[in-house]
Image (cartoon, rainbow, N blue to C red; front, side):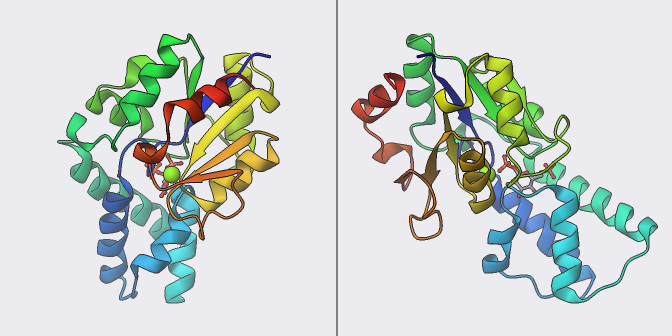
Length: 217
Ligand code: B16
Ligand code: MG
């Protein structure tokens, strides 16, 4: 049976979650909202718009449509400044090993990210050429935990959802993969990503024999 692999971006391929956090924290401070690392967990895998809704909810801040749009732009400009000088040193450990293994076996690879900045980030870190399909926040109408992003990726790879393996660091992303009937692999804290079919702290913990067993599915 044909298999395909789908990677989330933020928190799986690169640690951009810290930059998202800094940009949201800056906006939060300006709005007089207390924003903690714990609350940032809710922002992972979630669209920019949804993140701002959650932030305003936390701070009980009411916004006009115009303010809302302005704050979205402001957060993104700050985020873009943080990622401007990103390079391959910010690729998370052993990601290239896994990508090379899959490429060597001719397994199709897709990106399934909520971010509208996914493509430039992959380009900056030099991984763009690994991906047969990039599905990101620009194509998706329903954010994770809706399975849409991964279902589009599967269709683009011409692989049945059941044959797809998803690497995710966000609770919303694991739920999306499960709802898509895919094999979900949590990258991060096992107690946070407890709904994943398999859990790994990071790719350094994932042996080649395990990846080989997924390829044979
Ligand atoms: P942007 P992923 C997600 O990326 C992030 O985890 C999430 O924190 C962010 O709000 C979202 O992208 C939107 O990003 O503002 O760049 O469009 O984890 O799905 O790769
Ligand atoms: Mg993520």
